[in-house]
Amino acid sequence: MGRFYITTPIYYANDAPHVGTAYTTVNADAMARWHRLIGDETKFLTGTDEHGQKVADAAAKHDMSPKEWTDQKSAQFRRAWDVLNISYDDFIRTTEPRHYESVQKFLTAIYDNGHIYKDVYKGLYCVSCEDYYTTESSVEGRCPIHASVLVEMEEENWFFRLSAFEERLTSFYNDHPNFVTPPTKRNEAFSFIQGGLRDISITRTSISWGVPVPWDANHVFYVWYDALINYLTAIGYGRDADEVATWWPWSHHLVGKEIIRFHCVWWPAMCMAAGLEPPAHVQVHGWLLLGGQKLSKTMAASGSVRLTDIAPIDLTNEFGVDPLRYYLLRETALGNDGDFSHEGITQRYNTDLANNLGNLVARVTTLVVSKCGGVAPRPRDNSPLRPGAELALRTAADAWNDFSPQSALEATWGLIGATNAYLELHAPWKMEQGDELNAVLGDALEAIRLVALLATPAMPEVCEAIWQRIGLSATPGEQLFAVSATWGQYPGGSIIVKGEPLFPRMKTAE
Ligand SMILES: [Zn+2]
Image (cartoon, rainbow, N blue to C red; front, side):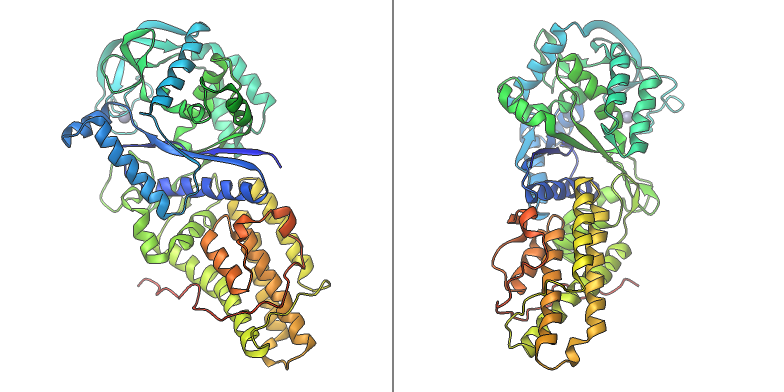
């Protein structure tokens, strides 16, 4: 047992929660739940990024102060995450006093270490990105993200000497081959470093809605530069050194591939410059694609519905919370791009949930009620299902540990398939009461218990309901995996009640 500190990116306060941010957040939540299950001391952080000109503009447009505006927007994120049953331990807002304190202390440390200097910046500026582009990185004078015309701007800025960290970053990457996963994304970040690093401008004078630069009252920090530090604010940077020492060596940032540069290049260099170790690990995920359009929070629309327009609650109303969570975790390997479609989620629901899992639980509980007077039989030690169940336990546990929820669920559904096949083979519905019937049903009940234990990080409510169906009073998510995940612990003797279907079938779309 160890510790596990998992973070999502903080979401931009101008946005509304959508399927893309839900994807990241559900993945982080499943990881946090898995690590609690294996007994790790766990901290799960999410939050909102509330500075920058766009926030100030949006607030003004709505006749609100930036504070009132971000109060409203961050509450919207909290509500969405409550609906999705996100078990965060801390929700950070970059406008909180604790964040100002950490940012100022962190950047003062970098300044005192001589890695920040003042210069005049001249370049092509995108108002939406609040960032500069070079002629090469622009697309014919337009922002590569927003496609808006870039403006020539000249500004006195404070700069972070990123270029001085090329060598240290290179050796850090060589010494920590798993700093960024998956390997394809690690290579992308590494080649970015090898391509040569430019110093970055980290303050703005043209904006006032930001964290003030402690040594120069005319400047505020560039929004990205303050945002990254949230990961340290939440563990007490500048306020509680013990807390930082407790959590920082166990830190895992889950981020989308569009922010690799910030998290895998800038951020470790910033930590080094402040005299701190970089985070332990960055897990990168890909984009979900809908109708061939990439899911990027700022990508301009070109006609059809975008994923960023779909609120998670529209899907949970239709499919339920856990089925949506399951689909997001199961459909796409973390790190790859994946598809998101209404047909896809309907199919997963009907096949994996209704036909496989739901049907298994319904069959077994119905038979116990009709053939055993509702009293659950015990599993056998030498059950033919046991070796497969033990393999599923090992495979799924390894996959969860490895940030691979898709493989973990695949292994779990393998056990569901094997148990359904076992029932087909022995056809307990044709059996008379007696030892053989009891053995088959007891084995199946034990497999169901283990399936719910393995799937609880993905579907906490459904798995709790399954344990209740099979007469267990405990909650799978509150178990200690090492203790519960061995064959033969299903006690038998419980009273089983046949319930409503767990997953009523969905109509397939025309
Ligand atoms: Zn832009």
